[in-house]
Amino acid sequence: MKRRECDFSLYLVTDRGLSRGRSTLEIVEAAVRGGTSCVQLREKDCSTREFIEQAQSVRDLLQALGVPLIINDRLDVALAVKADGVHLGQTDMPLALARAIVADTMLIGISAESLKDALEAEKGGADYLGVSPIYATPTKTDTAPPLGLEGLRRIRDAVNLPLVGIGGLNHDNAGDVIRSGADGVAVVSAIVAADDPQQAARNLRSAIERARQP
Image (cartoon, rainbow, N blue to C red; front, side):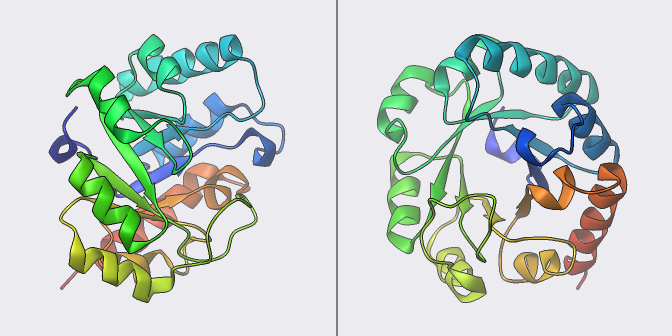
């Protein structure tokens, strides 16, 4: 899948720790029914085999619904399940090495915590950027200081890649992120921990679409 074919509008990042006992598959299906357009499977605390099994079940569901699957961090898992892409942080496998392995068969997203990160990722051949964190967030503690909307705008002015804002985003501030130049909004708890993930996704997608109106 090429970047131009991927709709990054509402980008769900999974987190089993926030799912309130519901399965990842259940949350993903509800989120997509509500308007989620891209799903990143993030698993930090399970074995490789369990990660692959989880990824395969999510992949099967998303293929049927026409939604791309991105695997967080683990290129081996992404390759094993034939995911649409992999998302790499600043301490994960280097972009150049990942690109050498997958060539153009897979999207590669890169977490950009600064303008420098963004420029290097674009030069290195990334397909999209996860600009993070926009705001402080409790779901990920190993991040740089918040960039804020002004930091997002600086990156938007400097690069031509699709930008997905992440970090402390929800229905109330999603529109601000789109108006500041992001192509999409990535959320974790705003959907995963919601009472009704489908309705939460629907509300977020509505906020995103409203922000795109002239």
